[in-house]
Amino acid sequence: MLSRALVLLLFSLSAWSARAPALTIYTEEWPPITFQRNGVADGMAVEVVREIQTRIHDNSPVEVVPWARGYKDLLTNPGIMLFTVGRSEAREKQMTLLGPIAVSQTVLLARKGEAAKLLALGAGIYQRPVGAYRGSIFADAASAAGFVEVDLAPTPQITAQKMLMGRYDMWVEGGFVVASVLKDIHRQPDAVELVRVLESLELYLAFSRGTPAEEVHRWQEGFSAIKKDGTFKRIYNKWLPRDAAPMDMRLIGLPPGAH
Image (cartoon, rainbow, N blue to C red):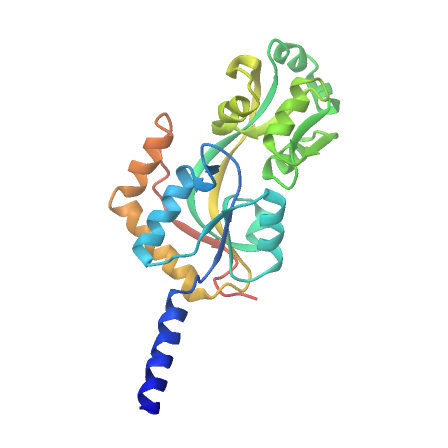
């Protein structure tokens, strides 16, 4: 009886281990790509991630956290997956990137009626203050473009509010979230206008250094499957009907499992 009980215990422990979440998965409040609705993660990228999880039988919960917290964990701990993360040369040396899951334009925005005045400054525009949210690739894009004064705020919503209140002249953000951010702060979409597009930005699922290679490859197989059978395109077009879904597939950056 004891040996049978021991076998059952070992079997139960093994089954529990198999069901245990393999990753800590973070996303942020960045509608309509990722956000929280009634305490539950939602959005285009969240729906894609959950479809991949279904294919690979993964039950890791998706947590919506402040970007700075998720990004810090991604850089310092193994077994972290954060989405969506903009691709850059610096990030390719720090993490493994799987995707793209979306392609965004990085836009420079001003208050309504002020874009022409700012563009008329010529090179002087780079001396004017701009805002972006802390730790974002949009802040990096502003600096890379040559802006010398980049004000950092905790969220896109606070960034937008500060720009509209006159704290700085321009706001740098991902183009397809601007309307949602303005809606969050109870402002109309025409409260801002485009100054220029700074860059086109690919967005990825990012895995931290030291995440097991077999886990990354499971996600790669699941992601490839939903791109091949049309599921990814259907989800993308549901949320972003005016944009073309990126159908190519890449695993770039640190080799999976690298320490």
